Image (cartoon, rainbow, N blue to C red; front, top):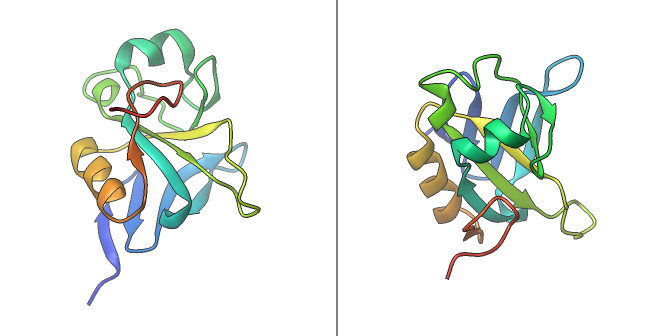
Length: 129
């Protein structure tokens, strides 16, 4: 039985981790985060991305975005997900991870169901009630 719950050209979600493809500058290597370390998940609103994001890296939004050269073009502009996480030492990271995916609702559901993450209500990392 496969460990992969979701896979597309941007991200892979397994039962234990999320793999963000094309994450690190400048080599576009992947970033792996254990699901147990994810503390909050949200769909990133298009408006906040346009005003505070880049196609790759850190913009004004508190998320480091994996590479997507078409991030601001349809349909990718509505397919952004972000999460906050704790690092290996147990400290909450101020800078979260953001990425494009082909089925953002499914990815958010998987992250919420397979981790102890809470749904975030806004890009600053506030938890939804």
